[in-house]
Image 1 (tube, rainbow, N blue to C red):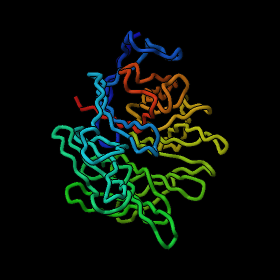
Image 2 (image 1 turned 90 degrees about the vertical axis):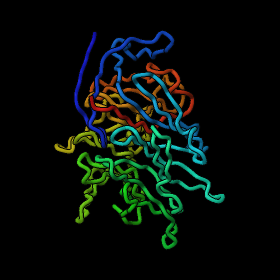
Image 3 (image 1 turned 120 degrees about the vertical axis):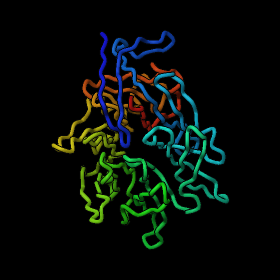
Image 4 (image 1 turned 180 degrees about the vertical axis):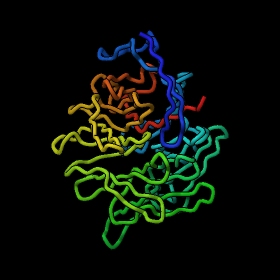
Length: 339
């Protein structure tokens, strides 16, 4: 069977044209029995992701995979004095990325936000010298600003506080989107750039909020489930994707799809109570890139293409056998240029 679907989409900041078609299977790639090789989707464009042996080992590296050429290149090896790089995002034209990484500041490790030009190899530390924990950056839809999580130690309450901060990339000016005593993290712009979605940790629960970026700063709670952790809100068109525990008693991550017009919540069919489906990266109405610990992988989290409707999944080994390994592959972001 041969299918070809073309549609314009927008992922965070980019208007995209995706062509999805069926391809054959390379003879040197092993496939799980559950993967129908006749229906393997081919995705045009590029994906950036990070991989590490263990989060606490501080050995994360960034890779860019080109779906057209099938090349998988470690770009973080080019970064002098920057290590443990992760959670990257593409600019609107794909020529730059932003990411979080560590530097050694006089014997003290510090998280900073970096901007890297893929074409010129220019690397810039956007939060250099502030001695704060700067993490989880994302571009605005127009590419002129970024949003990220910033943490500092509060002596009064004796704990770390994290707020959401927006930076103007031209002027370098920053302002606080949130300012409270909780851990606000994992920010993502709305499709129109007028609001930010993020998670807030309160007691044993993680909640998803939306805050407007206008003067009013209107804040709305989008999702809450008592005793449940939820992570990484991602906006695609007018749909919110995120991961949450399967239940209070089962911490397996399941990816959810929330229609922001109807408030209808869908537990996607590729989820399971026995393994994790996390770090969703929607690339069309039909397909997403996910990280999963499902059986049959190479160990830890592997990257898959997932059909949001049927629940079918295809290992990215089918595109390049060196993407997944016995480390963890996480935090995928996607870019494809307009045609």
